[in-house]
Figure 1 (cartoon, rainbow, N blue to C red):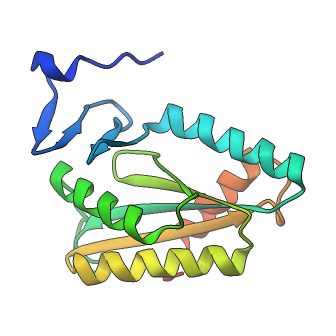
Figure 2 (figure 1 turned 60 degrees about the vertical axis):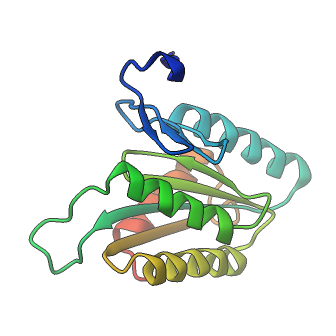
Amino acid sequence: MTSYKDPSAGDGVSHLGSVRIWPERVGGPLLVRHAVVPNRQATETALRIEFLRSLRRSSELCVALFDVRVGTDSDDGLHCASDQLLVDIVKSVQHHKRGYDVLGRWGSNEFLLALPEANMFEARGVARRIHDAILREFPEITVSFGISSTANVESLDRILLQAARDQKDAAPP
């Protein structure tokens, strides 16, 4: 279990205005205007809850994985985004996602968006809106999305695997 350092202690925690970023091996939670973007462990928990809810309600759940990189595909190497840039991108995503979608950090520059009660058409629309907003606001960023649904696969692991495969072969949503 991961324990977080006290943000007021000044021991290894970056403070960016009203935004606090806790460093962690796979990406710590981002605190954006006092709203936490959970780390991977908390995101997995929230995703499992949404998955079980979708099974109980017999409704569809879509999962979108997206990766944020500085540079373009034609660059020799894409670089990791800075903490401040990630915070700004998260603010944009929070503004453009649906109110009940669940956003969480999946890796250092990778995020997961759970879209409850969305079919693939709706999920692609949300992903397109987020993709276009990020490119409009941050032209130096490359974003790749992968989307999967409970309509296509039956287990949470398979949903994540399919979304990761879709992201690897990503064209804009």
